[in-house]
Image (cartoon, rainbow, N blue to C red):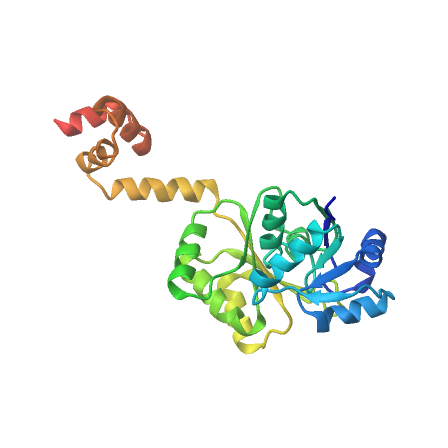
Length: 278
């Protein structure tokens, strides 16, 4: 029988946040696969964990992932840990999980800390519905495409960012999303934990003067449904009624249905649309 891959969440700052189950699994596993062995050895030493460790990160995941899968198929149990938080969230752990699922290898999670959830819950912004965007793409074109997708997002959004890129990212957010409410969460669970509440514009201006330190989690207010509806109405009002009809009919809609939809979009009766088309 094959072994099991354990996704072990480790503290994002405060070492007391590790779970008893996580300590036990890390001790009992045949191998620990760590994103950065130099960083993880400090955690293992703190809890007296002597399990052998190997590296598994973005730059070796293709070759190392295959080797780990072979060891799992041979019956070994492997615990996967990231630098901090939950493996598989914005790290190569998702690739290893996919490989294991394809090979029929059991995968289970040992839940614990996650920076995105920690920041969201202390932000004071709506938590019932949220979208996690991780780190925005480094490529300018791809980054702009993702920001454009976020523009009309009604859910609260959570983004990771390194301190030296924070101001640039805030300015990018302002350009595309407008001046939303925002929370900059830094040093989560650590001694100097802080949540900076402001608008995107205020936050950009503040951090241009005050150099940010520590990894940041940005929590951004979603667009209200009222704003979304107003934006849609403005879009249609820029078109003539004939252009609006053509938009739907070019998409394959019958004339009668298109007329009904145009009337709904514009908040008027179908008769008014009919008269405008005469």
